[in-house]
Amino acid sequence: LWRGNAISDLPSFEPSVEIQFRGLSSGIWAAQSIDGKYSELDIYLKYSIKNISFGIFDYYCPSSFKEIGNYYNLNQRTTKHTLDFHFFYNGSNNFPFKFLIATMVFGDDINPESNKNYYSTYAEIDFTLKIQNLRICYVLGFNPYKSYYGDKSGIINTGIKTSGKLNLSRKSSIPIQTSVLLNPLNDIIHISMGITI
Image 1: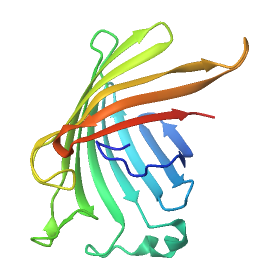
Image 2 (image 1 turned 90 degrees about the vertical axis):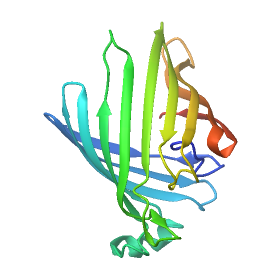
Image 3 (image 1 turned 135 degrees about the vertical axis):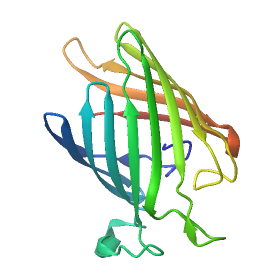
């Protein structure tokens, strides 16, 4: 699930790795659905100072990893890359709100009517509660104008996400995440679950 949209209806594997140096962090995130019809390879660079961070993300979404040769296609009209600039506020224990605003600035974000970029923008605010080892997050995401996310402005991502640990025995557990999210603008509901290994 990503900003009110289900990229794939089937389970997927999502490995990631990140390196950090002082306020800088860079990483790679990949995904592959079990039927092979959804593939994604993202790289990012972020700079954080206190509770604020700025970042640029490169989302690469080919039909499959068999098309990895197209990775170097940066033609604005045909590329499968999308560059997304982020501003993120992380909140604090005393002010448990998070705020994200992200704008696509290049790539697979073309308005077919004008053949120009939508500059699709997504804004989200989260409020998080902690109850013992359970984290509950209330999400509200908004699309401000016609774009990749919807044909008009409106709420595209709202609901509840939870994260915690599932105890397998007295000494072992695995992180687990669940979510129930609505996309009112596009009349969609999403239910998902994930585990971390």
